Image (cartoon, rainbow, N blue to C red; front, top):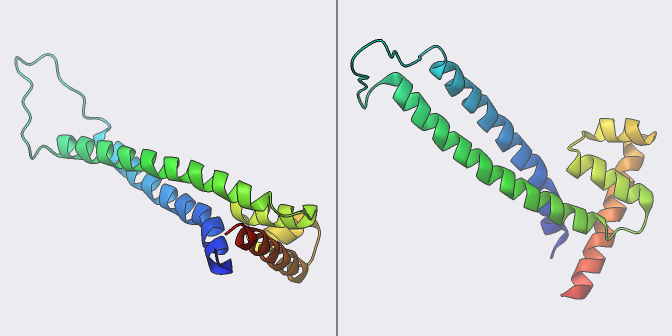
Length: 141
């Protein structure tokens, strides 16, 4: 595994988090479309056509919820994999920098503020931790 591959696996959480946010926004939009359209039981027959906007919205909503569930499953796997990689780092500060940055999806600035360091120092901690993971993982292969 290369250093780029280590970073890619750690960054997968952020990408999946962004994907979940996009799906949540779409789901919310379709939920709004379906609100206020109740079935009227006072009529003899309930009639809908394939082009009924509520039916189309419900279908799309169901599809999006299925996609969201798949992305959540990928997210769980990505977090577990990232945690396993981060646990390879011996230095507590390096582990924390990676955890805040990748698992908690914090910005560099927020990570530095949380740790009480300058951003430049957090970059060094990060790079040293990535190097350590790379060395340990490459020994195993």
